[in-house]
Image (cartoon, rainbow, N blue to C red; front, side, top):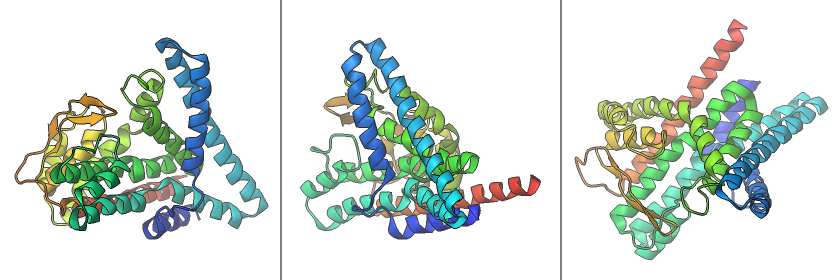
Length: 319
C-alpha cells in the first residue's frame, strides 16, 4: 500500500501539478512562518537574539508541520485504513513540485518565444529571488535553467528521500525546512541573522539528495541524448562553485550535460552577489535549453522514485 501511495502521488503531481485555487500545505506553512517571524522580530532586536529567535522559528514551524501531519495521518488511519491511505497520497502529492516547477519554467519559455522582454522578466520574477528588471534574453534563459536544475533537488529528490526514511510526515517536515529557507534563508541584512538556522539546516537536509542528483541527472542525460560523461565530470569538478554546499551539484551537472555555462554574478534585493561560473561554454545558451532541463529534471525525478521505492521494498523484505 505504501509503495502504491508513492506511485499514485508521483503521477498526480505529474498530471495535475499545483492547481492555483486548491488548498496547499505549503501556503499554510508560509503563513505560519510569517506570523512566527513577526513575533520573533518583536522580541528579538540584536543579531544574536535574532539568531536564537530564528532557531525558535525553525523549531516551531518544522515541529508543528511534522506533528500536525502525523496526527492527521494517524487519525485518518484509525477512522479507516483507506482514508489513511488517501491522506498519505495527498500529503506526498503536495510535497512534490516537478510539474509545478515545469509549468512555471514553461511560462517564461513561452514569454521568451512569443512575448515581450518585459513579460519574460515579470514571469521570471515569480520563480527566482534575483533582480530581473535588467536581464536580457540569454540571462533570463540561464536563470530558468539554473532554477529548474537547482529545484530538481528540493522539489522532488529530497522530498522522496525523506519519504523513504520517515514517511509522509517527515516529507512534510522537509517541505517546511525548505519553505523556511526560501522565505528567510538569505544573506541580506534583513534575513542574515533570523534566517541563519533555517539556511544551515536546509543545507544539512539537502546534503545527500543534492549528491544523488549528480548521479540521477547524469543517468537521465544518457537516456535523453545529452552528454552523460560531461555531466558526471563537470558536476564533480564544479560541485563547490557555489556559496551553497548543495546547489552546484545539480546545476553543474546540467551545465555539463548541455555543454553550457551557468552561474555568475546576480543581484538579490538590491545587493550584488558574486558567484563563480559552472560548466564549459561549448556553445551559447539557447532557449531550448529550458525544455531540455525540464526533461532532465522530470526523468531524474522518476529515477529517484524508482530508486527509493526499490530501497523501501528491500528494507521491507529484510525486515
